[in-house]
Image (cartoon, rainbow, N blue to C red):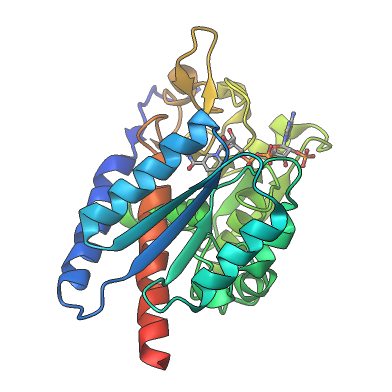
Length: 286
Ligand code: NAP
């Protein structure tokens, strides 16, 4: 064992504030304000908090925003026709449908209906394809937020061994693609990965997007690694926590994101960034 170290904390709140300042400054010079429409179906309390925070984020940077609160029994057709209207509404540059949707609505029908230019979550197949090809204007918010954190702290990705645990369409897979595009050597792990600890221990940059409290322990981490914790879980006392056993891992890592205050605050800032990008692209082509 080498000498004891204590990881530097990656401060997502501070980076997020600086991103919002940058967006706000740009918006103040724009004749047409970017506009984001957010749709929420049903009464999921966690979703309601996310939507409120998104609206607040829009207000903070000077965007227009509209929240459509639809009842739980909204039909897929009703939701699709609202999307059709927003797709052609000229003041709306970004459309976001808060997930999860009630079970009777097919999520993929909804995400595929939003025109790709207004798809600020970057879930549409066309945008996913562009991400894969390195041609995307709109990037998936959580992975894009992580890239912004790594940039801000000057953490070198090129040549680094990057291990992503989790392969969801919204976090794990696009995260791996962005790290690869930045010249990382990327391994993606999932629930069928054998000897997970031996893989994670190789990582210079370890991203955990699993959704299990205290899943990543110190024995799974290489001393000096950069640890990015995407997880949002509750511990045994009901307190918000990530996937990483923060106490033990922060004693050997070089950088670590806390939960809360790490990756989480970046996600909405990246949504705002995408809305600004979408607005500029739409305004330019009209
Ligand atoms: P998800 O769709 O449930 O995916 C979880 C992934 O973890 C899956 O790929 C799964 O593998 C993998 N996994 C599960 N058990 C495992 C194990 N024992 N060993 C290795 N891999 C395992 O979750 P998600 O949507 O990606 O979200 C992940 C976490 O991030 C959640 O806690 C979520 O709340 C949080 N999150 C945070 C933000 C933010 O802004 N901070 C944004 C999005 C998500 P399989 O594919 O084999 O099942």
